[in-house]
Length: 152
Image 1 (tube, one colour):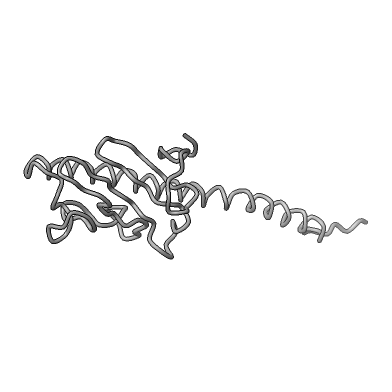
Image 2: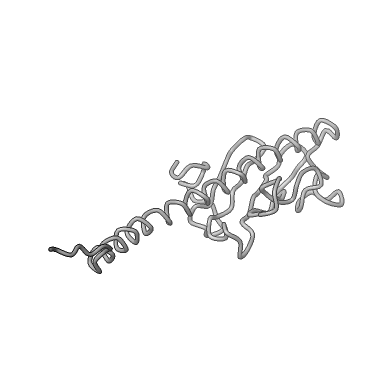
């Protein structure tokens, strides 16, 4: 009579662990990239909402000036949320008016220092609808960074 043993051999177990490790090494970075892209999309949406708030401010005041806190021309907005995403507790970007004049403005979403998007680079939207994303995260916009896409 032959005795059958039940269970897994050490080799079968090691192959399974290796396969799970390989799958995890591919899935985790893809997941993190997807989450970062979602946070960036939230900031882009917030900038669009912020631009709408600036247009409402202009309709009331005939100028974009004075839309920042304490009636200032630049800095934290008084006409819109100061952080993105606008809803929820996990803020990733600070929203500011980086330049304003009577008939023009530039809005900026800057990743919060030490936050999950800290290395993602700032986003900008101006009154002409021009969009910029500092993909290189060097605090400047290169000629290839004049859109919100991975490549322009």
